[in-house]
Length: 117
Image 1 (cartoon, rainbow, N blue to C red):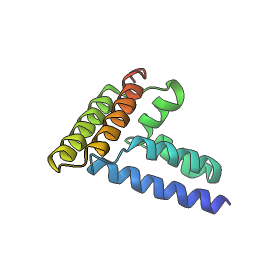
Image 2: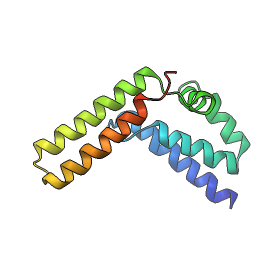
Image 3: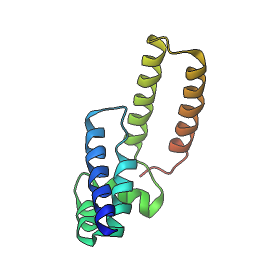
Image 4: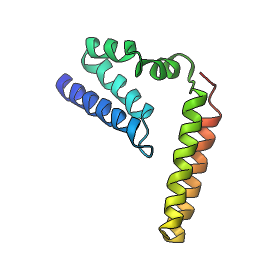
Protein backbone atom coordinates (compact mmCIF):
# COMPACT_ATOMS: atom_id res chain seq x y z
CA UNK A 1 0.00 0.00 0.00
CA UNK A 2 2.96 2.33 0.62
CA UNK A 3 3.80 2.33 -3.08
CA UNK A 4 0.26 3.48 -3.92
CA UNK A 5 0.54 6.36 -1.43
CA UNK A 6 3.97 7.25 -2.85
CA UNK A 7 2.68 7.28 -6.43
CA UNK A 8 -0.28 9.45 -5.37
CA UNK A 9 2.20 11.78 -3.65
CA UNK A 10 4.35 12.08 -6.78
CA UNK A 11 1.26 12.71 -8.94
CA UNK A 12 0.10 15.36 -6.46
CA UNK A 13 3.47 17.13 -6.59
CA UNK A 14 3.32 17.08 -10.39
CA UNK A 15 -0.21 18.51 -10.35
CA UNK A 16 0.88 21.17 -7.85
CA UNK A 17 3.90 22.04 -9.96
CA UNK A 18 1.64 22.36 -13.01
CA UNK A 19 -0.53 24.72 -10.98
CA UNK A 20 2.41 27.11 -10.71
CA UNK A 21 2.07 27.74 -14.45
CA UNK A 22 -1.70 27.34 -14.89
CA UNK A 23 -3.63 29.87 -12.83
CA UNK A 24 -6.83 27.81 -12.80
CA UNK A 25 -5.12 24.81 -11.18
CA UNK A 26 -4.49 25.35 -7.45
CA UNK A 27 -0.99 24.55 -6.26
CA UNK A 28 -1.17 24.36 -2.48
CA UNK A 29 -4.04 21.85 -2.13
CA UNK A 30 -2.09 19.42 -4.30
CA UNK A 31 1.03 20.00 -2.21
CA UNK A 32 -0.94 19.38 0.97
CA UNK A 33 -2.24 16.16 -0.57
CA UNK A 34 1.32 15.21 -1.54
CA UNK A 35 2.51 15.81 2.03
CA UNK A 36 -0.30 13.60 3.33
CA UNK A 37 0.52 10.83 0.84
CA UNK A 38 4.26 11.02 1.50
CA UNK A 39 3.54 10.98 5.23
CA UNK A 40 1.93 7.57 4.71
CA UNK A 41 4.59 6.23 2.36
CA UNK A 42 8.04 7.80 2.61
CA UNK A 43 9.56 9.85 5.42
CA UNK A 44 12.36 10.84 3.05
CA UNK A 45 9.95 12.24 0.43
CA UNK A 46 7.91 13.95 3.16
CA UNK A 47 11.03 15.60 4.60
CA UNK A 48 12.17 16.65 1.10
CA UNK A 49 8.81 18.28 0.36
CA UNK A 50 8.62 20.18 3.64
CA UNK A 51 12.24 21.33 3.42
CA UNK A 52 11.96 22.42 -0.23
CA UNK A 53 12.64 26.17 -0.39
CA UNK A 54 9.67 26.92 -2.70
CA UNK A 55 7.18 24.14 -2.05
CA UNK A 56 7.72 23.73 1.69
CA UNK A 57 6.68 27.11 3.19
CA UNK A 58 2.99 27.05 2.19
CA UNK A 59 2.67 23.48 3.47
CA UNK A 60 4.33 24.35 6.79
CA UNK A 61 2.21 27.52 7.11
CA UNK A 62 -0.95 25.44 6.72
CA UNK A 63 0.17 22.60 8.99
CA UNK A 64 1.41 24.86 11.79
CA UNK A 65 -1.16 27.68 11.75
CA UNK A 66 -3.89 26.91 9.21
CA UNK A 67 -2.54 30.00 7.46
CA UNK A 68 -2.47 31.10 3.82
CA UNK A 69 -0.10 33.81 2.60
CA UNK A 70 -1.55 37.14 1.51
CA UNK A 71 0.07 36.64 -1.92
CA UNK A 72 -1.63 33.25 -2.33
CA UNK A 73 -4.95 34.82 -1.36
CA UNK A 74 -4.60 37.50 -4.03
CA UNK A 75 -3.50 34.97 -6.65
CA UNK A 76 -6.44 32.72 -5.86
CA UNK A 77 -8.86 35.64 -6.07
CA UNK A 78 -7.40 36.69 -9.41
CA UNK A 79 -7.58 33.19 -10.85
CA UNK A 80 -11.17 32.74 -9.67
CA UNK A 81 -12.12 36.07 -11.24
CA UNK A 82 -10.42 35.04 -14.49
CA UNK A 83 -12.24 31.71 -14.59
CA UNK A 84 -15.55 33.43 -13.92
CA UNK A 85 -14.89 36.06 -16.61
CA UNK A 86 -14.02 33.34 -19.14
CA UNK A 87 -17.24 31.50 -18.28
CA UNK A 88 -19.29 34.65 -18.86
CA UNK A 89 -17.47 35.45 -22.11
CA UNK A 90 -18.06 31.91 -23.35
CA UNK A 91 -21.77 32.30 -22.54
CA UNK A 92 -21.88 29.28 -20.28
CA UNK A 93 -25.51 28.40 -19.35
CA UNK A 94 -26.88 30.47 -16.46
CA UNK A 95 -27.39 27.50 -14.14
CA UNK A 96 -23.67 26.69 -14.45
CA UNK A 97 -22.82 30.35 -13.78
CA UNK A 98 -24.97 30.27 -10.63
CA UNK A 99 -23.26 27.09 -9.42
CA UNK A 100 -19.93 28.70 -10.17
CA UNK A 101 -20.84 31.87 -8.25
CA UNK A 102 -21.88 29.90 -5.17
CA UNK A 103 -18.76 27.72 -5.33
CA UNK A 104 -16.33 30.59 -5.91
CA UNK A 105 -17.87 32.70 -3.16
CA UNK A 106 -17.68 29.77 -0.73
CA UNK A 107 -14.05 29.07 -1.58
CA UNK A 108 -13.20 32.78 -1.39
CA UNK A 109 -14.83 33.05 2.02
CA UNK A 110 -12.82 30.09 3.27
CA UNK A 111 -9.53 31.43 1.89
CA UNK A 112 -9.97 35.00 3.13
CA UNK A 113 -11.01 33.95 6.64
CA UNK A 114 -7.79 31.96 7.19
CA UNK A 115 -4.97 33.75 9.02
CA UNK A 116 -2.22 35.37 6.96
CA UNK A 117 1.07 33.53 6.82
